[in-house]
Amino acid sequence: MNPADRNVLVFSQRNLNDNVSRCSGFEFEDVIAEIEDCQIVAPRLANSGRIPLNPKRWLSRRSSLFQYWPSGVQKSPLTRNYDLFFCNAQKPLELLALDAVPNWRERCGLAVCVLEEVWTSGIEQHLPLIKSLSKFDLIASAFAEPCEALQRITGKPVIHLPGAADMVRFAPQSLTADRPIDIYCMGRRRPELHDRLLTILAERQGFYLYDSATKPPITAQHKVHRDLLANLIQHSKLFMVDIAKIGHDDQKKGNIAWGPRHVEGIAGGAIQVGYAPETEDYLQYFDWPESVIRLPQDPDKAIDRIVAILDDPTEQERMRRINFANALQKHDWLNRWVDILKHLNLPETEAMATRRQNLSRMAAGLTGKHPSQPSSTEPASAL
Image (cartoon, rainbow, N blue to C red; front, top):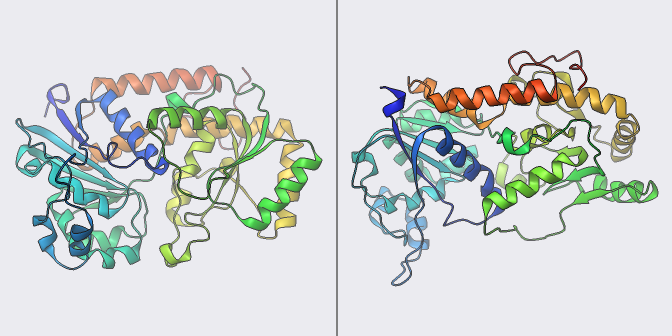
């Protein structure tokens, strides 16, 4: 297939789910649209005569008959053929809306589905829905642990495809610019560590940024939210990371995973501090020592480690340059799309090469190094 002639159809949930946790996936879709001849189809709920999703959800846990129950979204049958169909779902239940494009399988040559959040326990809970993934030619899971089970159940190849970031959006204008936010803790947090951070940053007259909302926040425009998040990280010295679903053992059921937060911090030039898995998949993508400052479990000792790095701007700058160079090499959405195309034996487009060159120029301008040659032991040359 000539990549210049390839056309891609992206099935997006952006008009069905306004939770900020979905903005990362929508950003991936936007990057695909920039580097491929792409059309995004984003269905909406029907305005009248709406059939609730609840019966379909109930059936999806029990029978393959769920596929014959309407989801309540507007239907948009395809009137032309596409070479590649791309579906990005956060959780398996989002797949219920695929009936908005009832003939997607007949009209698309190849099909890939990315699942952002699938826990091993959730596979059994939604077994009929998981089995329906056999319609796809390739399945990608952002979590490494469920890949084997997904492949066994569907009979289709499954790859690990972790989160990433739009490095063009997240990259700071300068790695030496002032960062007034001392530490940014986004989303869930460890209560005891949070209480100590409140106290110590107040004593230091510092700036501790954290979320105060108790319910999942929503946004009307995912691009605006990603711009805001990038801007906040670009102005943060430290960025808190943690293992996925910390404090929600009922959801993860012992699974150990990590999310896009572990990429977004270094993408914006912040120093990542906190807790990260020691799993093989994590160490594969973060194979340099500066990628995260691992904090002790004891909150008091963790605070001592945070204060030490806040008081060492030279070490911050050294780590920032190393992390940013690695992020440019490993964690742009381009890297994830390349992984998908490789497994489908599809060539890259000229637009992909152009984006790669752009990332190279960014690396040269900000770190003095080409993204294919980041150093994990020495700081990049000064600006």
